[in-house]
Image (cartoon, rainbow, N blue to C red; front, side, top):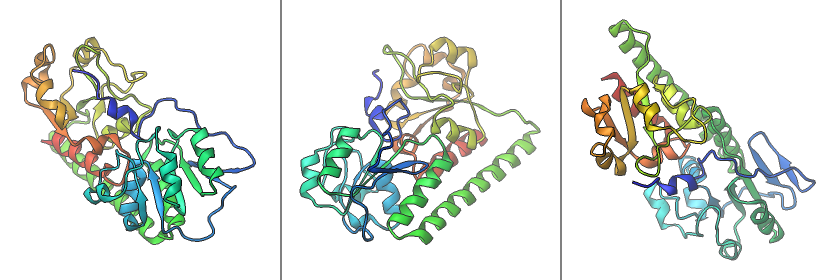
Length: 297
């Protein structure tokens, strides 16, 4: 099996991409860079999103009808596929974006500085969100987009709902631990890649690690670096539960030597929808709830 390379192209990727530096034409906020060369003069009604996470958030803010362009990876909600595609994330068709004459382009930091400047030079307002490793960062992004799109109340409600759902997850997990009379957290392993190409998982500086932690699991790969986690480390840590993308789960449980893992033998390997783990968005709560539910059985 090869690593799912699409994963490493998503906006959620936490590799060291070049962040934009400040200059006199840019205004730097805690988690984004806003072009000052072309300031927004009104609430945008024609928006191009170059980020799957941003696309999901805009739909959650009831602004999906303002999108006139999106990337090939923006496939949720399903109606997003009806919006014109402008290519990938780091190989966006800038000519097509400019032809659409949007009021605003919203990107991630995978969008290069040169691409950013091309949009600026075309006279189009642009915001670039830095990658965030935390749920708090997600809240900031939702709040910022709420301000930009004149949806502050909707953004607040979205954040409050997420926080309330998180509280409920903790209450349920605490109840399970009390019944089991234990404070030990179940050991969890999330499979990013496996097989001859190597084994890969999410370390502590990733939001995937935070997803597992908020679900009240102990991520056995939390100290891993550069996503690499060897077979020796997997077997030494013997996870109680394994989570993997749905499309890879059937192959994983039949592949040697993973067949010898305790979690595989005990049928505690669970497939999860790719985008729930790969993209930090309002749907991330569903990933937390899913993992929490499975490790509570």
